[in-house]
Image (cartoon, rainbow, N blue to C red):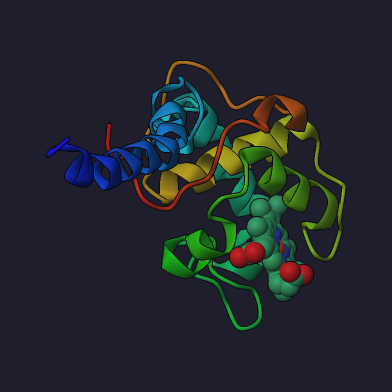
Amino acid sequence: MTFSKPQRPTFILAAAAVVLGGSVVARAQSPGSTVWSGVYTDEQADRGKAAYAANCASCHGDTLAGIDVAPPLTGAGFLNNWNGTSAGDLFNRIKTTMPLNAPATLSGRTVADIEAFIFKANGFPAGQVALPSAPPMMANMKIVSQKPAN
Ligand code: HEC
């Protein structure tokens, strides 16, 4: 009886922490669930670098820093725009609206290669499996700007 008073609020706080923390832990631990778990290959990013130079650099710049109205494709501002979306969302954005002067002219494979290059430029690590060119397969690859703690 003497313990019932402090125990009750402690229990509620602990339960709330489990509910709030549970989803975060599950996301960080499920493989392939964020761009920090290696969702493209180095070879793919190299192909993407060449395709970027040919199709994107004239507006977004050789270093992806942006030129005039074409925004940067690396850095805090870019990552802030895409934080919480998926690799599939970014794929669709590029595939359907870019290059701005010739939208929807690039193959899915080329778009995936360019996206891999953009991921590499943003510091996301390479892995063993190439980024697919099918958005439904990338819906669970979350773009998160900060590397999740294990
Ligand atoms: C003719 C110039 C031009 C070319 C070429 C071009 N872009 Fe863009 N891009 C823009 C402009 C301007 C915007 C901002 C306006 C808009 O969103 O339409 C933009 C926006 C974007 C965005 C959204 C950025 C954000 O922070 O939300 C992405 C991603 C992007 N471009 C990727 C690409 C990729 C990848 C290529 C090459 C396949 C490419 N662009 C080629 C001009 C260009």
